[in-house]
Each structure stands twice: as structure tokens, then as C-alpha cells.
Image 1 (cartoon, rainbow, N blue to C red):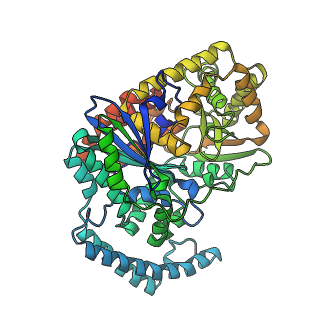
Image 2 (image 1 turned 135 degrees about the vertical axis):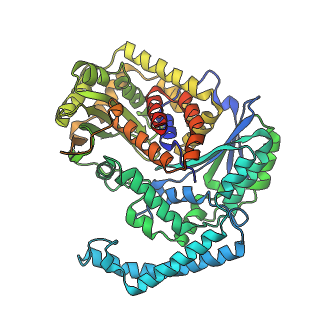
Amino acid sequence: MKKFLLATVMLLLALPTLAQEQSLRDIVTEHRLDNGMRFLFVQRPGAPMITGGWVAHVGSANERPGITGISHLFEHMMFKGTSTIGVQDAALDDQIRAELDALRGKMFLLERDSRLKVRTGQAESMSDPALVTEEMNGLQEQFQALIEKQRDNIIKDQFDQIYTEQGATGMNAFTNADMTVYFLRVPRNKLELWFWMESDRLSDPVFREFYSERDVVYEERRMRTESTPTGVQNEVYNSLFWRGHPYGWPVVGWPSDIAAITREQAENFFDIYYAPNNLTAVLVGDFDEAQALAWAKQYFGRIPRGKQLPPDVVTMYMPPAGNFVYRAEVDAPPSATLSFRTTAYGGEDHPALMVLANVFNGKTGRLHKRLVLKDQLATSASATENAQKYDGIFQLSANGKAGVDPDALKTILLEEVAKIQTDGISEYELEKVRNNLTADNFRRLEDNFFLAIQLLYYDGLRDWTSMETVMNRVSKVSREDVQRVANKYLLAENMGSKLFMRKAGGEPEDPELAGFSDEQKQTAQQMLTQLKSMPAEKQKEMLPQLESMRSQAPAEMQVVIDYVIKQLGK
């Protein structure tokens, strides 16, 4: 499955929007099938390509220990085809999958003994060579032989090829803590193909290459987390902050869970969370709505409603009962991040927190003016307000210059918080934030692709209508509201602090990354890792898509994309 620009898309989505002159309710038509699946149609006459996508209301927050990462694994599996797509001999494929399941069951029993030995100190880890018995060696040889036999029977990437041969572009997906989203652009005269292909992979899933794909996900985790300068440390800090909460484990999953997930567990997960009553589809473009609805009923309407409703996420945030500080040495410049628990998406104080973050942000924001321009201690500084489906977090971050003490960065960040808590913000700052958010909104909603993605994203958070209602509330935020939420949530006694110092003798940083925030650096590194894993010709094919993405991206993402394009050209 292709995985380009996922982080870019997510950063675009993280930016807030305000209501446009024409209400979304005036341009979006909602239909609900008898099986519970919803369809959102947006007419954009003259658009030769239609953006189609759907969101499964499931993410890593819906998982549990033992199967963490399964939502992200599904993102991979949904591109592997069906009983009629992606395979030469379907009966042989069924037979191989059954044999793999049986072998995997035997291996799991042996791994149970290995886990006990690791837990009791008889082995260092599950990868300890001493744990590999003669019996396990034999099972692994049989297992690998079956994997190779399965690969010989597969038509690789046929699902993608069918779309591409018919003129579709940009097929991709992303998973986060709250949702999994699938999308692509399809020519107007191939819309029925989209209905058939997307309904087929939902009604006839086979989870082909399941065990080998787990290894791909495991490698992705290594690239995204373990091979980045601060990936492991950020993961540790996040788990400390979200103590006991499902946001505390990574979307990609814990390594031990990824290695142990079975196809039977995957099938049970699919039956609950990929049932039509847990899905919403979106079409944006120039199409006949009556015909589209007829196709929706014909293709998606045949999928039965789920027998079991998705269970509630009941685990709540556990207050830290005091502040905590996490320090680490990393192969990166010094930095400080302060974290505060806030409110879930759409909460009473969510709009005021959005405004507060934007008062801190940008080249004319308080953090940049203080830390970068005045004190000249940092190369960048920013604030993020991330209200998610089940809870929220507000963060202040600064990336220091070489040799700067992260505690000094922390002190100044707290000083800037205290100024707002004591004196509030100016009317000028409030109006500037509103104007900037309005301009961002108009720019993004002009593009059919990003309108579709945002409808899917906000429906995944709460409901697509909240994309407008929450943003309308931003226009009513007062200076007093901003000061009040700063005093309510940004409390030092309930704060998490992440302080990084550069490791002595560490690898020097690319000078071209100077001035990038920690998030921008990680995004650039992930994009380059994903792109450089592709063949050279595929990398060249990606350049026009990068350029297109750049034109729609905010300024902070444009510099990241510019950097990636330059690195690919070397």
C-alpha cells in the first residue's frame, strides 16, 4: 500500500477552519442506507475528477492491550484485494491462509513459553536466539515456505492497478487514534468503478498476506519510531502523559502486540468496526446524485449491518496528581515541550483554546517574538491545540539553539503563559487570529480533495456538521474567554514537561533543518523514509503530487515539502 504524505495530510487537518459564507448544510446532502451506512454528497460542477472516500469510525483508541496497532494494520490489509482481486487461484489462496493460521497457532503456544522466560529473566527478549528451539525452527521453515507459495499466487498491487489503469489517482489512507480514512480521486465516468471496488473490499475481505504484512508494519514502526532521533523518547513521554488512557499507546502499536496479532482477531475486529453502520462515505465533484445514490444502494446496500455494535471507549483520563518532568539525551538540538490536558473535540472550551494556540503561534505570535527574535534562544517555537474524540491536549514547544539549556526554554514558555493568565490578550491579537483562520479556511475549501478529506476527518471526530458548528463558535470567543481557559487548563501543577538535550558525540543535524520545529523535522524524516523506500522511478512519479500538495499546504508545511523535494533531487 502506498503511504505518501500522511503526516502532511494530518497537519493540514489539524488546522482549524471557520464557517464559509455558504453553510455546509447548504452544499452537503446526507443519505443513510438501510444498513446504517451514511453517504455525504457535495456537487462541484465542472470538476473532471471526483474525490471519493470513506471513514471507519475506529482508531487506536478502540484497541486494547494485546492488539494495539490492529487499526493501523487494517489500513494495510484493505489494499490486499478480495477473493476476485489480487490472486490467481482463489481456492489455493484459501487453503494457504488456513494452513498459515494453523501453523501460527502452534507457534503461538511456543511463544507463550518464551514470554514466560523473558518475564522471569531466563532470556533477554523475545528475539533472544536461545529461545528458538528445534521445534520452532521447523515451524518457521514451514511457515516461510507457505508465505513464498502464497506470494507466487498473488497478483501484486492489483487493487491499485485496476484503479490506475482507469485513470484514478492518489489512492491512500491514514489511521490515527480516532479513525481510519481511505480516499482517492476517480474520473467522473468511472464513478461506478469506485462503488464496486470499495464495496467489494468491505463485503469480501480475505486479509491476504496477513502475517507477512505484520512484518511490514513492524518495519514501519522501526522507521517511524526507533530510527528517528526522538521517536522512542516521544513515545515514552506520550505514554506517561496519557497514563492509563488508550491515547497512551502508539497508533502503530507496541512491538510485542504487532508480532502476536492473529488473523482470527483481525476478522473479529473487522466484523465490529468495519460494519456499514460504523462507516461514512463522501463524494465531492461533478456527478449525478440520483445515480450515485442508486449505486450506493446497489453496491454498499448489500453489506449486512454489524451484529455487534462497537463497544464504548470507557477509560477516562487519569490526572497526574502533580507535575512530572521527562528528560532525555537525543541526537537532536535541545528542546522543551510543555503539555496540559484540556477538553475533547467540540467541548465547551475548545474554541477558546483554538484561539489561544493561534495567539502563541506564527511569525508574529508571542512565542516566536519572544524566544526566536527577542531572546534568540530558539530556532522555532509553537503551540498546538489537539482536541481529539475522547480527550484533548495543549502543548507549547521550543527548539533551542546549540548549547541552550532546555530548562531555560521551559522557564520562558511558562512566563509567556503567565502573561496571558494575568493580562489577557489584546483586541488586535484576537482579530488577527480570526482573520488568519478565515483565510486558511477559504483557501482549503476551494479544493475538492481537501473538502472531502475534512468532511471525513470531522465525521470521524464527531459528526461532519461539527466542522462548521465548532468553527462558528470561534467567532464568538472573547478576550475574556481566552484568558479564562489559560487559567483553567495551563496549570503548572498538572503539567508534563519533555526536556531534550543533545547527546554528546551525536550525529550532527542537517543545517537545512535549522528553524524547523520538532514536528516539522519528524514529518520531513518520515516522508523521506517512505519515499526513498520506493524505486527511483516511483520517486519521480511522486514529485508532481508533492508539488500539488505544496500549493494547498500552509506555510509551515510548505517549507517541509520544499526540503523533501530538494533531498529527493540529490
